[in-house]
Length: 289
Length: 157
Length: 106
Image (cartoon, rainbow over all chains, first blue to last red; front, side, top):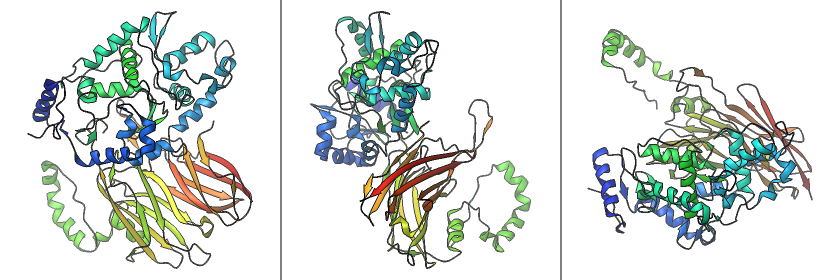
């Protein structure tokens, strides 16, 4: 049986065994060290400048798990297709909507004024006693300040505005707070991350903590430190997409029933994932395979 | 050189059409081979070059050896040409040999282009050879080829 | 609505060959059927791209369904004089998108 080559026994031995059992039975997943993708990872690491930018301590952004071609697409704003959404966000920023006759610009003047917002969300909200993420914050502005309808999750508008808000914080370190009133939400998110689910009986952790750098079929597993790059332009999607869309994808891959985008479960999970990215730079809009 | 595409038919259907198979075969052997689907790579190439065999060389086609996802594969093409008013590369056609529609795109250059160079991103259905066919102002054709492996992802795919 | 993004250097030397990068937001929809309703979705792709400088076309490109969504296209131009570029994309619904950019020859 093939399975985990290249040493490095994962801490959760049973987790790996679980994976292998599935690989054998379903023939769907196979983890293997080395191979061509590992070469790509080394190539990426060879770029010292990138390493400095996308690696902090032992935390590596998914950027370093992408091929040089994909990295090149992200690096140049005129090759990065995600920038089309940032542009749209700029157009929407000054668009007056709702009964209050306001636009985002009425309060925030220009997008750059929102620099620093993206890295600290999801954040505990005093008013609702809930944890809210950046998309929900944007929609809150719309319903409360502008008296306009909230944008639908994954709509072009919400993606565009989220991308813009992320974009103006580019380079800033992700910095979510997980103590104080955010703690219970963080704990729930963490529990989700470690909870096995779906027919394949896999937790987020089984891939992204136990096995980053190894292959899952033809893909190189990243550390899942996705706090700084979403919404992301995914080559597969051929469009920009939210982190919650990716969560749904991950959940479906392990044959679990996905939660709704914007659900409390996913916002809690987002906080945990973003905490794992604390210190890594904001890259929005990231480009991934 | 031409190539015949074999379509999968289910057995029952095959039995029904079986009777006319002989006739179809006869038709194939009598020059019907030339009438390939217009999106067939060989037919397409012949259409571009008007039957002439393109020479190898001059065309440099750059694509990743392995594409992370077939939906968006970067492509760069350049043709060695002085790009002067009387000696330039007129066009380059990109053919993805195993795509459902082999014809992908075509670039039209002029001497004002300065270089016969272009970059684009293409969709690739599967691992395959990609061709770039250049037409020069003197009527000659050149071809450049490269093979791209398209991976089927574990989670990314 | 700003749909296209174009990068052209602001200045160039006479005779310099510059690189121009273009991006446009478009689904490049292939003819297919709606997964749920089975309703046919007609093809709608950008089929033609054209770049002109001071009214003269110097580069153009024909696209089919094999071109990725939100098409990126880069190409070159030999700059001889100051002037204006115009870029034009046309799709199956006959919608035309345009973008302009100026360049100064030092």
